[in-house]
Image (cartoon, rainbow, N blue to C red; front, side, top):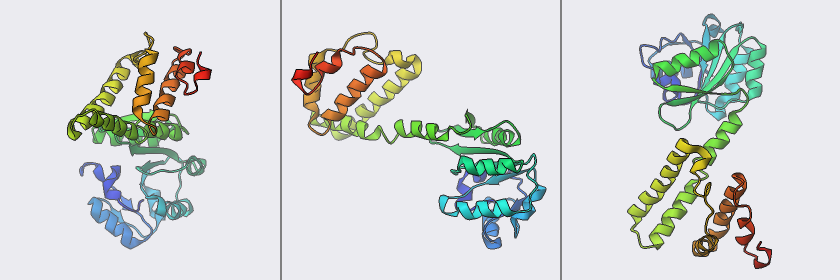
Length: 265
């Protein structure tokens, strides 16, 4: 059952030999026909009732069509007992999944998340999870399972490791350009710095932090804060202090980095 760019979702990415789909349902028969033609698999049906005869349902929808599609699916004459319902490349609330679980369905959410070769999976044991792992095998991808109800934590980690640090990479590149390095090289060096830090962390965890085993030079940090400029200085200062607090190291340095000289330790 789907709407929007179903062909670009995991459903459409499945190899043609495995897309032995049955009934394809949508908000209308016309849309169902178009979806089946795009997938080059399955056959359109006029109502979601006709999904009753299959062992599992793959679902994809953009946010603006989600409510109406879910309504059609919930009102359909479907015996959900033991049936898999897999939400593919779409965001669906836990409350929605619980409603289908109450009907007897085995539910799971599977989506791509920006890292090549990996899928994120949220679900319980059962037919839905088995279906997800079959999808991953067919796509030659690794399914990474997260605990039920923890999607918000996962998404926060994704934001922290992507969009939230992009401005920092850009600031590092700007500092390098101001130091006389040409634009392209500055961007490459800044990117490489962040990549190397990430690789070191993957290898050694928190011990890869530059000051985990040795104390930083306070005068050097003060000089760097001054060089950062008025817009970046408070951000850099907060990041430095966060590191000392996070790893419980060099707590005495916090006061020495304060912009207020009277608060120095």
